[in-house]
Image (cartoon, rainbow, N blue to C red; front, side, top):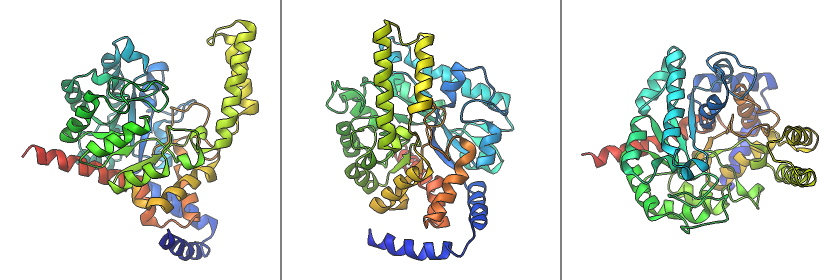
Length: 398
């Protein structure tokens, strides 16, 4: 977009007069003085697997309170992630409730540090009090279990967006990862669910769903939708999980937001190739030795390949996604959806945990983004979409 080229030249000229130390100071000031929303952090699932208190400093994982405060993070969406198999065995709703219980227990243990907001007003108050506000996002609508009453149940527990499906097609939507597409987009119930989410004020999250389902969501939804943790398919042409330019333009036209996933395989084609080669080598290793995937020998071999062969993205690769989307649709439609604690050991160099958001902001400043641009990316854009959803819901109750 020509206007952005001109603006970029002007801003880069201004930035050239600032030292690197000046820019670092500005970056840290921006993350510490504004609402910083990350659309997707998998702490609840991590807590279900590890006996760890993220209210204190931890040696593993990507998130804990001290690192979050250092990085300026104050409003991370806690991902209520339901593995695909939970729908098949009928335990999805109970599992989702347990993960929410885990978040509530964490908040109860550290009420001076954490809180769960039920509205935007509550989120703003909690952040103003110096707390980390934990809005909930359900990753995989399997827990809805075909019941609008369950949607209301999870809304009442704090869920403010739902990723309609995950790695397998479910009773709501086809998945971008699944070769089987039983619905050719959304199921009849899925179409009804999108409408009811609009009425209730729960944001629709199009990450993970198939392209066909995405277009149906945009046609049905009366309010802006989000992609809570997706990146630009422009850089990973073979990866449907990311969003095409055409989809990003359509999302923006409806005033939605794409929140960039930091995982190296979401960001870099080279990383994806190395990952595929590692998986192929592991599969051959298993077949040659007649082992199962869970075998200790297999795990050690996989870890060695990851260390020796995996190609990590870096901060500049991530920034390229921000630039591409900005040039495509403008800064009003970009957010952060890191997938911290959700993408394992695949995070890019320079963005390894929640303490490193200042690195991202520094990179944006160096590429000519203004303070106002960065405030929008940090949280302003997502807050706008959430507000639109809240306002629409309120109108339905009049």
